[in-house]
Structure formats: C-alpha cells, structure tokens
Amino acid sequence: MTTSQEELLPATRRALLHRIAVAQAEGRAPSLVAAVVRDGRTVWHGSRTSVDGHGPDENVQYRIGSITKTFTAVLVLRLRDEGLLDLGDPLEKHLPGTGAGEATIAELLAHTGGLAAESPAPWWERTPGTLRPELSDVLGEQPLRHPVGRRFHYSNTGYTLLGALVEEVRGAPWEDVLRREVLEPLGLHRTSGRPQAPHAGGWAVHPWADVMLPEPVEDLGRMAPAGQLWSTTGDLARFAVFLSRGDDRVLSAESVQEMRRPAAPPSAVDVADGYAYCLGLETRHHDGRLLVGHTGSLPGFLAGLFFSVEDDVAAVVLANCTSGPQLSAVAADLVGTVAEAEPRIPEPWRPLPDVDRAVLDLAGQWYWGTQGYALRLTADGGVSLEPLSGKGRRSRLRPNGDGTWTGLDGYYTGEILRVVRRPDGSVSHLDLGSFVFTRQPYDEAAPVPGGVDPEGWRGLP
Image (tube, one colour):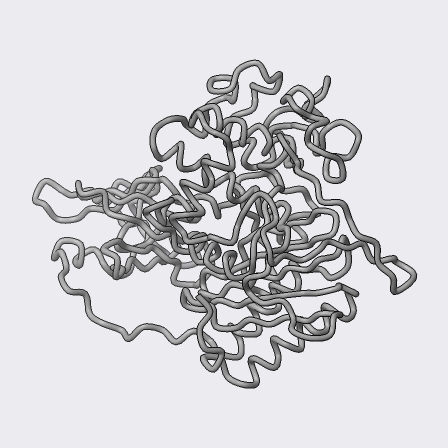
C-alpha cells in the first residue's frame, strides 16, 4: 500500500520525521514506527530506533492492545447488519447465563454496561489466559461496578463478552471469524492473534535510568477480543481507510459512520477534554480538529490510530515500550501536520445533473419564528437547513422518496421534514418535527402555533 513519499512536499516529510524523532527520544522508546494516509493511500512512512542499522518498516508487527476492540466492534456491527441481532438487545437474549446479561449490546460497545474495567486478579495483561478459561473467571463474582447504562466506564471485560457473543452467533472462534470476515477481505495479512516474524519485542524502560527489561508475551485467552492482536502500520493504515470510508465487503459506509458517533454519556472531564466514546471508536478534539480512532497498550507496547474525516488524513503510530510517548498526541500531530501544510484540494464544483423542480422551488430563505434559515439543495440529492446567522441548529436531510426528508445530523437527526401545501397546491409552510418554517417571519397566512396577532408588526407604542 505504501506509495512514493514524493507525494508529500519535502518540508512536510521533514516535519513528520521530526515529530516522531522527538517522540521516540523524549519518550525513550526502543523503537517507534508511523505511517500517514491521505486520500485513501499511504503517503509517508517513518521510524526511529535505538538499534543501529535498518529501522522497522511498515511490515514489522507490534502488539496493538485495545485497537483490537475496534475490530471486535466491526464483527458485532456485521451481525447487526445481517439481522442476527439488534444493538438494543440485552446480551442475555443471545448469550445467556453470564450474570451481566441486562446490559444491551450497544451499551457493551460504548462501555456503558456498568461492568468492571478489569477481570479479577492477577492482572490479565501479564498472566496467561489459561488462568481465566471461562467467562465466569473473567467477570468474577461481582461483574458490575455501576448501574447499567448510566455512565461511561471503560471495560475490558465488556469486550470479552462481545467476543463471546460473536463466537456464540457464528459458531466459530473469535479469531477465525475475524480473519474470515475482516482481515482477509481488507487485505490485512500481517494482522494476527499471535506474533509473526518480523515483529518487535516488548520492553519496559526504567523510569529513572536508561535500561530496559523484556515484558512477557501472553496469550490472553478469553480476553483476546479486548486486546490480543498484533499488526503493522501498513495493515492499520488500510484499516483506517476502511473506518473512514467503509467497504461493502465488510461494513457499509453508513455502518462505519454509525461506529464514529458518540454513544456514551461523557463525564465533565471528558467534555472539557473534547473526548467521547462511540461504538468501538473514540473521538478527540485536537487543535480544533475532530479526530476519530483508538489507542492501545499492553505491557511492552503502545499504539495509536486516528483520522480526520474532514481532511481525509489518517496516522498510525506504534512503539515497543510499556509507557513513554503519548501516541494519541503524536498521531494527532501527524494528521495536523499534513492537513495544515498540504490542505485537501476540493473537487471542482459541478452543477447538479438533474433537479426536481418542486424541490428547487423550496430553496431559499425560511423563518422559524424570527430566526432566518436557508434551505439549500445538496449534491447528494438531499437538502440542508442552516441558520443565516451561522449560529444555531443545522442539519443535512436525505429524501425519503415520498416528498419528505429525514434529518441526518445535529438537533434534527431522525426528525421528518414535510412540505405542507394549501388546497390550491401552493406551499404553506415546512413542518420539521412540529416546528413551522414560513417564508416570512410569523407569516399570518400560515398555521403558526399560538397564532399571530391580527394587528401585525408594530413599532414602539
């Protein structure tokens, strides 16, 4: 997938290299490798290493920790899209007897199922999965820490349950299903449950001395769907393209877009930090840019994958140390460097190939009470409704084929826009979720809720 790095300007490539060099040096990582994707293709790869000679390339495996959860979420969304389950179903409906079956599948995906963050001791990331052969061993005697559905509480055990759900519905091991349904269709041939050469070794770096200690490499067993996978920057770059665009062989663009929507109630700290968790993905605001992706860590390894849909730029960063560089910030900076130094060139404007005359007649200025709005036709066949002041509720709406539209985002998501006509066929007003939009402020000829004073507009009495 890697293409000529000449596609980026020399100054941009140097800025990218400088950023990962600083991260590796200041974070004291034995090695750090990164890739940047633009317009669906890898346009840059770089690495820094403490070992003399050739640094790791896009084919060297690192353990990616909780980015594994995003792969598990994709499998669950596939089951939903096939009609085998609903995200609103309680887990008990498909996987009975866990003791945590009250939580819905969506709540488990969004970490709002109330489950504990970790399995009972000993720490699962540094001990063999054979110590927890059954789900009851993973969940323990008291699996819940919070009321179901009430708050975001990151839970590795929740994703263990989702992996077991996949196995129950598919009748096959989680890793086999993942390879057949996601890795092979997307060409992620260097992503696996166990390390495959060439791969990096995991290290702990002493906090007060420049010395290292090798970390154990454990098979996580039942906990695998929460953090087992090994991958490369090359494979994760392809995965980032899929998460931003979809692929009908795996998940549609609509379904991956659903994965990117915040689904968990954020805490006050998260609101201040611009963080939200979605369905197997997280969103972060960084220097005014909305990024989507996930981080990962296991003893000896750190990972970060983030992309900006608006800029069509993604970055993957992997390191082989237990702690050190903040890879989410590094990935965000790599995305920002490319997006700002070489901003996306828009497609040429083109007129619509066809237009419905009746819809065109609706375009223009409307009023909700006294606030002005503009209704515009969009290139995808829908319409948009935006406040003329630039501030306020706005939404894109898709046509339903019956003369109505459904809101796609913002306050009006899921709400229906209807055109209300008079007996002679002329347009009286627009009804959007009971809000009346008229051609003039408080148009007396339209059924404005509460009525319009018959004396009309006036000056100071």
